[in-house]
Structure formats: structure tokens, C-alpha cells
Length: 232
Image 1: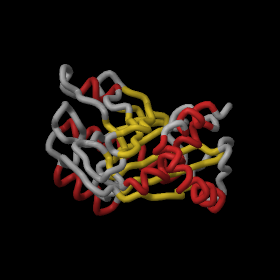
Image 2 (image 1 turned 90 degrees about the horizontal axis):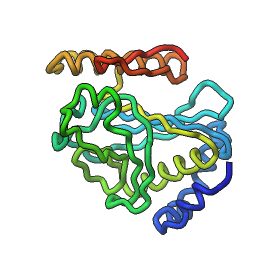
Image 3 (image 1 turned 180 degrees about the horizontal axis):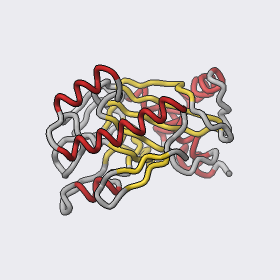
Image 4 (image 1 turned 30 degrees about the vertical axis):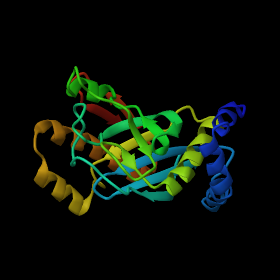
């Protein structure tokens, strides 16, 4: 893998600044957690209720991921539950991946989420699904996942390095909450419809599998918008 992706990103002033401020700390933190800065893969978990973005990593030829960084979600919009249409102010919930890097974002730097995914397209408003969902800086949101400008700098660098060193896609799972203990009881108490209930069942399966094995499950989409969560 060449450095073409990273080189292109560094042509933008905000990315260049992020590297100047964060790159040494990024490398140090990766080494601290046994991750090779030149050969690691990322996985991102977002928890809306808990207000946390978790960053997990593994070396390319390893199977199990390690939690090595957390970010605080500093603002929120909408409520717990999936996004089903444009303008509902909802942060999506489901299994996604980073599909674009925006070095000239209105919100400092931003990482695009591939909403709507297949499930969203089946279950959402067919003519008005919306889009442009990001993890971004500036600590404001109308349906995205905001962190501070300072923290998006570091997250952006981690993601650029992973893609530049060969990761084809960075998976992102967005959960209503950590799917365990008191949170499960709370989620069960606020379920408003079968659509949300079914989604949360599917998300809990993926959450539990990953927590148990520290490996990503295989996720496939069914014709009714549900998910098949299985061992890889």
C-alpha cells in the first residue's frame, strides 16, 4: 500500500494541523496497547445513551480487538431508536462503516457513516431517508455523532492511518446504549414499536458476540430489514 491516501489528506490544512498536533501521541498510544502503527485495523462502537465513542484496534493478522481509546459524545439530538426519515433529528442505529473522509467539513473534520444501510432502506421512509451522517467535531448535531475539535483531530488521524496502511473499510456499530445489565431493562421499558424492538435484538446479538470473543461477527441483511448475526 502506498501513501497516496495519506498524502492526499495531508494536502488539506486541517489534516496537516491534526497530524502536527496528534500523530506522535497516536503512535505512542498504539504501541502502548500492542498495536503496530503501520499495520493495524480499526473498529468503532458508538453508544448514544452512554455518550461514548469507543475505538478498538487489532494488528492485521490478529483476530481479537483491543479497546485503546474512548471519546466523549459532547452533544446529542433525537431520542433512542433508529433513524427512519430525513429531518427526524435521529442518530442512526445499526451496523455501518466509514464511507468518506471530509477534511473541509463545516464541523472541522468529519468521518462519513454509510447511512442509510440496507436495513434502513427497507424500513425507513422510502422517499425521504436522509443522509449525510458523520462523526465530526464542533460539538453540535442534528443527527450526527459530535465530539470536540480536539478529539476529532486524533480520531481522524487514527482512521487515515488505518486506511492508508491497507484497511479497506472501517466498521462502525451504533448502539442505543451498552446492551447489558441495567441498560437492557431501560431499553425494554421504552420500546415504542416492534421495529425498534427487533433492531435492538439484532444489535444486542452483535454486541454480545463482540464482547465475548473480541471479534467482529458476520452481519448480513435480510429481506425484511432484520439482520443475520453469525460467527465469521
